[in-house]
Amino acid sequence: MNKSLFNSLAGLSIGLLATGCSSTAVITAPPITYTNTTPRTSELSESESMRWSHLDMVKDTVPGMSVNRAYAELLKKRKSQPVIVGVIDSGIDLDHEDIKDVLWVNADEKPGDGLDNDGNGYIDDVHGYNFLGESYHEQMEIARIIRLKIGDEAYQAAAKAELDSKLPEAKQSLPQLQQIEQFVSMAHQNLQKELGKEFYSIEDLENYKPKSPQEEQLVSVLIQVMGMGQDIPTAIADLKEGINYYKGQVDFHLNVDFDGRKPVGDNPYDFNDKKYGNGNPDIRDEDESHGTHVAGIIAATRGNKKGIDGVAQNVKIMSVRTVPDGDEYDKDVALAIRYAVDNGAKVINASFGKGFSPNAEWVYEALAYAASKDVLFVHAAGNDGADLDSDENPNFPNDHKLQNSPEIVNNVITVGAITSSFGPEMVASFSNYGKQNVDVFAPGAAIYSTMPNNAYEFQDGTSMAAPAVAGMAALIRSYFPSLSAVQVKQIIMNSGIAPQVKVIIGGPEGTEMTLGEISKSGKIANLYNAIILADKVSRGEKTL
Image 1 (cartoon, helix red, strand yellow):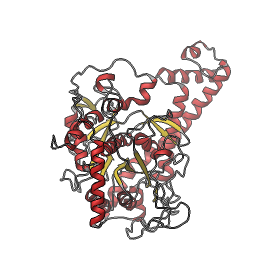
Image 2 (image 1 turned 90 degrees about the vertical axis):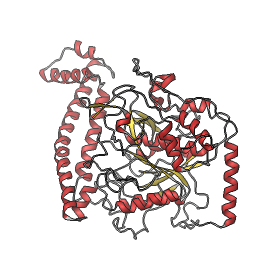
Image 3 (image 1 turned 30 degrees about the horizontal axis):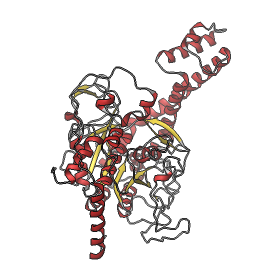
Image 4 (image 1 turned 180 degrees about the horizontal axis):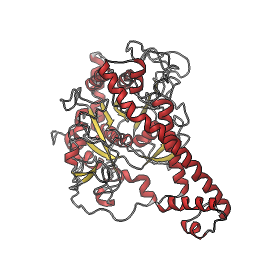
């Protein structure tokens, strides 16, 4: 957007004032280094488990991002300015107790009047925008390619081969899991009644005398489950999660005949068809929780004695509802990026991805637009446990048009996931990796964060690692507003911790490699070190 000379100078003045306020003290603390390769032997306490991603490698022997240490030792007496983070995701529970106070508010928009008060092209967008309308369940892109015959014959054949490799497993696994869940639930309820207690131990089961062969079989199954180290309620919950996953694949994701876009009313493959969606990016479905979990990781209200603390303070979350239960549309992603940029976001979090992107060019153009406006785009690496440098594992959106080709923009940072276990199992088994295409790793396994209806839950995924880095980036931009998006990306990559330990990739029987062999930086993101480096760069003491 072009501005007058007056506005440009006014903005510059404000920026200089803000920079001066944020640089009240020179940081002299040395960065954290970690060479000890001895893994932690004790388990995390319940409290540590809920906040391990904020803990410190040296002080807590946990490969967290040293968030708490950064606040306590480096940021206490420093001032910051607000930063907007665009969360391109599913809807966010806008009424959540730990999120409602950190939501971005479009002050120029009057809620509920059905008018585009600020003239930005979007009606009633008070907290963001909803590009999905009232839809939620959706196909994977491969099913849409087949249904709508998108692309040439080779492209359609590749989509069909991918679908044919996934659908039989879903159709076979769904009834099996349903049967197992019914059996375990029935056994659990019967034994609770027979033992006269809600919670029982494996010893209780071993000492119980079954009254029939059928009951003996029920007890045997429960003993087997508990013998694997799981309590029965957790096992049942895991089975139900698996059932929901495969049911979603059979009913929606891989169902070629399903059309989830119909309620929206637009043509998602026509970029000029832009008059769709609405200004309410709240959740629409009881299972729509992903965006809420992501938002909490970035900026859940710190210090309110509720739930969790987000990575960043003085940050406003802009909810851009774009990601359905299935694959996102390229048009929605491209427009969501542009919406976030045009409405003031300095960091965008993108915890989504897919293997087929028929209109990837729209997204590349949007990323270039974000780069031109000095906006950092943080992307999750994906959860296939795959090498993104391989031609067989494309992951969209990305910052290169062909595998292993030069980056077309310099404002994208791609994040893989680590666990809380320092040592060989530190990189999450599900996390994608790649010397060229994954920039840095961050905590992404068993991350405790916000869920709809004022709830909280542990979740896994590079979807959790990306917002940890997005929160870090927002915090840096808040305290050091003179730094550009590219500088912030380089600071995060250069300042991380590079433990000299080999990690296993590709599953338990996989290959041992160093972080330097499976990521561009070879490092784990660390807020403490990033703040120290950001201070030096902002003062001109260090160049990148």
